[in-house]
Image 1 (tube, rainbow, N blue to C red):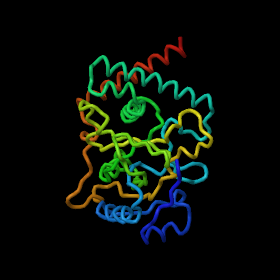
Image 2: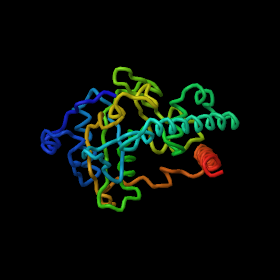
Image 3: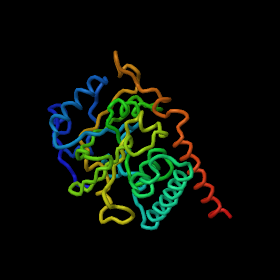
Image 4: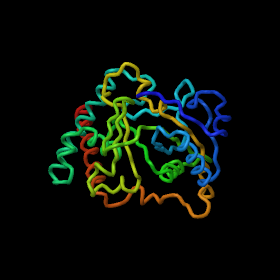
Length: 277
């Protein structure tokens, strides 16, 4: 993917002090209202990009001290060609099982699942079935801030801002920026409840699978616009706002979640039978 050069508001410009953004400490904000105001400034200053967000419990860095945002199929400091092929082979198995399950249960969207691998990959990634070449993002700042606090026992969590091309369809292919962006709300059947509460998107590098010239081209640090640290306490939200309840982010009776759990268990069982029999 192409690397971008974002514009900063004055306080962030001073905070970065000419350094590479991904290697700087996160910009601290104390309230949700302050976070919204800062992101509004970024949105105004970076008109060429559509802003997306990601919440994490901490700032994961590589050995060079840089924040890193690889899709999970590429995560490992040193990843051999054999390992990456094995991960994609597992993804192929999971994709086949998902297509089969959609067909057997006559779900809406089963034709799209079969024809467009990015749709299948998006569902597998979002429901945690297996590693994929896609990264979970959201267009909801509230969702990102909630995930930064969710289960976080530290005093502060992380909210990241990324600049991506403007979307044009439910699956946006941008050859100039070498990116694909999938809008989960548009590709998941109504039985999938989780994407509707999380306002989820999946993003990846276009036409990249198990071969690549330079692994760093797969890292979303190339699209980083800002990184913030937020308090994990309830006082962060102030009056009128609140963290999204966990039972809404992960709603019960999600038919697609039940299907994905079953597929994951089948894969684990099959792997055990191969390696331990």
